[in-house]
Image: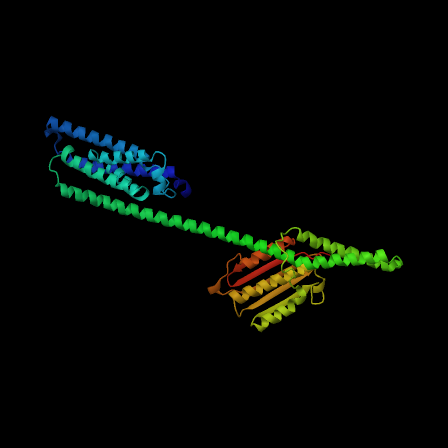
Length: 413
């Protein structure tokens, strides 16, 4: 409902309605106070003059309210700058329409609220010259009303001019405040959009860097497996005297090595590789103890639990790609805990088997003064990209007093 009412068309309807109703109130108050107490005692000429004056007031006021939309065009205060509005098609006619609205106040009290709305609009959305022109027209209309239309007991010119400048000054201050507020909101929106674009670009860079890192890690591992295949195949070619059992064992090694190499190659083909620098892979779960010892020496309190088919004797059986991913997730969680919750204990759980996969959970208390964002940092974004490429899932949750990272990775047979 609120969004519907904010539409420029309905805002314009509300403005016109306000101008008309407030103008009618002013008309009744001003013209009503000028009516004689005994209408029968009024001469015919004076009655005719008052009737013409009331009819002209009403007619000119309705004309001013009808012309007001053309002077306010375009009406979208939130997105129209004065410079754009001044150069838009038909802007000169908007100025003419505004001057007509202000000029109507020379004979119409009903047009006074419409002219005040126009002055505020010109001060907030139009070039400065438009506001000055409308102010000059208001002064001229006030002089005509005081000395031509109703020349009974006119005010001194300097008093009349001072009154017009006071009214225009208040309207100008209101319009300037609205102009400043719109400029501030526009700059804040632009800064927010720029920040979102910058963060999106940074996220893409992190994802691309993580993809490249995975490809580099695969380089040596895949080369090693392909060299094993070549070595065993060469042995079968140049040793035709091998017994059947040796040939069977060698064929089994070839099959398993080729299958593993095919899985890793499929992962490599899903990422881009920019160069061949730094192809040494990250350590895997076998180096997890060294990581915990290093962090413990730095003051970290880490509680590690392995469950299911995953224990210290079977971590070497986890596929290399999955093992490195779990190591990187653990490393990132410890880094985040050391950075955002120093001195707090970190609880890490890894449970899994060859059928259900491996579930990873890391939890650490969260200090209120250093609350992390629910979506995590850029390091976790890179890990999420890595996990998704392996067919897994990673979720980060920030609750009252705790920060939790949960991941699931497949454990291929």
